Image 1: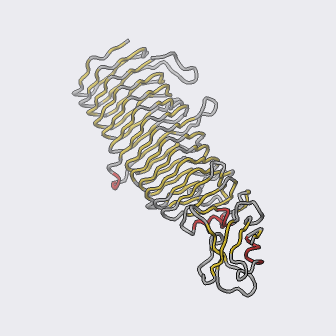
Image 2: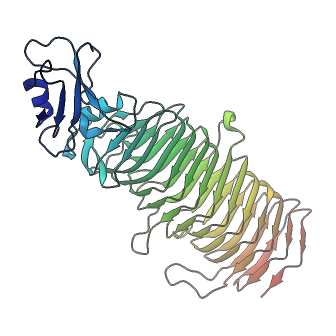
Image 3: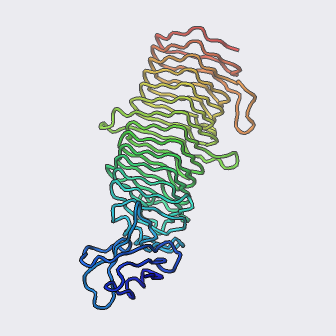
Length: 438
């Protein structure tokens, strides 16, 4: 037996006569919402509009149509159209099953979706687009062990509301994976994680947003990797507040000479005693063409910044990297190219190493240290090392300035072409030797 639609299956097919029906579509043949159904005459469980359907044929009071399927559920089986109309209720019915959900290509207007634990939500490609239907709630909230991938999230409306984001990882979200997404438009945030642990955000493209693109507040062991982030409208692309043990690796963050956002690349602050041992790792990122600092960190117990390219702080008076009240710092192998103030600016930090960095074309000072102690500053190249960048390069004034610090070692650095002085130091008990001025 064949039916053209789910409506015809429910209303026109007598299940006592035809127990197996092939349905050609949910609304019309070929709309990918059909499938094969069999009649279970004794079933009486709740219907969900996709897998389990109640008959409305005259005289039928008990029994259910049940879909034959293997693998994940297709949201079009539940009535989603993907034509830009409001599909929220169909998505919610599919999610309530607790099973993995597949979203074919199309444009689905949805809001307020909440994934259950251990549930995956994935598209056919980034042409499977979820458009914000309401602007006072997330499109998608994720629970523990949930996963979302191969989708686009889009808001045509720009709204500053703390509840309006593409994806929210709720309190105590654990082992959440967010991958291969395209998130664009006017959300307040692309991803907002609150008190969540082991969240991985990778291989996503994020453009726009009214405030920070990725926000992590509290929680631990979170990873942001291999993402492309551009055109941020807020104060920072990535904002971390009391987030312990965060790895930010292999991301591109920035703009162009004609579209240079004023936002910081990464802002991280730890001031909660419960997160006293906060650790931040910033590794192998390209943070380019932004007016704000590439990295600004306040109050972290341990900071590792290595092998990054920073062409940031391009606003006059803004340093490329700013560290305040941090400890156990490893600043190694970075290339800082142009800054509107200082390359690396540090205040009230203690214990660490600044080694093998190349810092050039900053407006004022390559490395500036105020009240910092027990650092090894070694094997850096600082100064006018290459021809000046016409889009924001400067002839540097001071190579390294150490002020009011103690027990620092400054050795084997190369200074070139600094117009005022290559090396200035005044702290007590410093060891200074084997530096080269050119």
